[in-house]
Length: 106
Image (cartoon, rainbow, N blue to C red; front, side, top):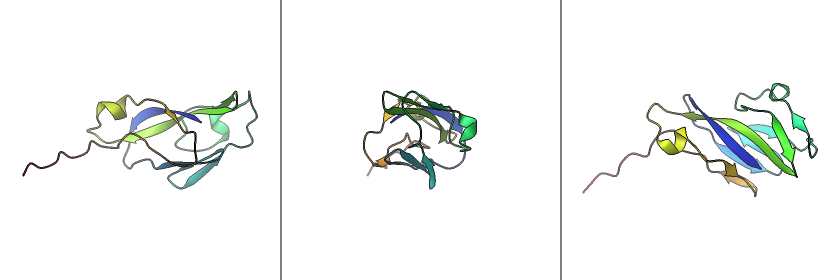
């Protein structure tokens, strides 16, 4: 599964996981198992607030773009995120909603 992100200023973070051909987005299950190879499922047919593109299956791999929420002080890794290739089931790391606070010096 190839996931591209479209950063957007929003409150709250995105928690993402994969389970086979399904994505779990903040508890919402997006089942894409019915998309055959070479087909496109239009974004409007899905009804997810997190989906920013159509979903395609190309040579067996699902391709989609998700909205990546970020805070007001997001860093470059969040504002210009690299695509994620989720090949196994489980949690998917996404860029941070806000930068990590600097460690206090002792």
